[in-house]
Figure 1 (tube, rainbow, N blue to C red):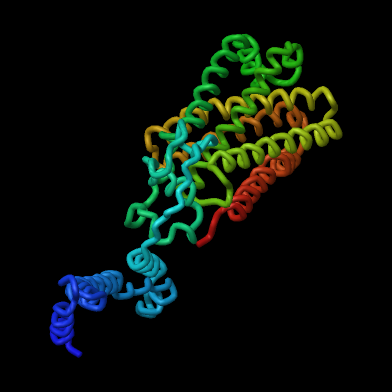
Figure 2 (figure 1 turned 180 degrees about the vertical axis):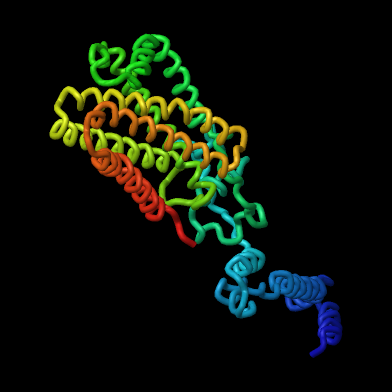
Length: 378
């Protein structure tokens, strides 16, 4: 039955009451009729709210982030590791949502006090210091200078502070030694050209004078080593297997010290055997004096080669002149000391060749072999 018809029947039924009041059935029908629009409106409102809630909660699914393997697979086959690293960083954003709020009591390297999360002020410092030596961790992150290294500045003694200080020390020490032993040096120079038996053996040396003479011999070895060093850099090679240039100078110095020591032993053995101990001592004194004079003559040459760019041809000619002059002086000394009263001149030639010329040629060969062994051949 429709609601209007049902309500009409209820109204008709109401007139039948004894007191003019609707019956219970009529009252129920009237109440249902009054509440029906409100109930319908609530149902429509609830349905619309439910539909709007479901519509608002539904969102399209976000696109999943690619994995590093997928990003690298999408690049060309000839992509460099730096390009792969840049592509991965551009497509994958990693957000750290679990930062610790506890204080860093140990502090980070380079930070004077602890910092809170996110307050790192110098990330470049850690990139350059902590990860610099690891090429795997710093692919694509290192921003060094581009370009190629230029040619290194050639070595020059003019800018070598160590050898300059050594030469200054030798000069000051030599002047001081000569000042203290000037009388001894003058007596040795006079005795060098004296004939045998003219008071040459009457000299007596003090300990200071002997130390000075040994110093002059060592100075000669050092100056010869520096001269050989400069000659080698100019004419032979400028790169060696040694760690520094000073080691090459030390090698030359050791070769020259060994050369003069072996010569002194040979002098003593030969002269003591054939000419006696007294003449052997006189010869050793004369030889040491000649070596000391040789070093004094080489000192200006080393200065000119080091600081005034003296040509190697002139330097070689000067060294050859000094060596020849010293050998002539020793030849004369050996003649007046050992062979003045001998009938044959062949003995002095054999003596001079055996103890002066052959050791000098042997020294030259040893120096050549040492340089060939130490230089780097490209």
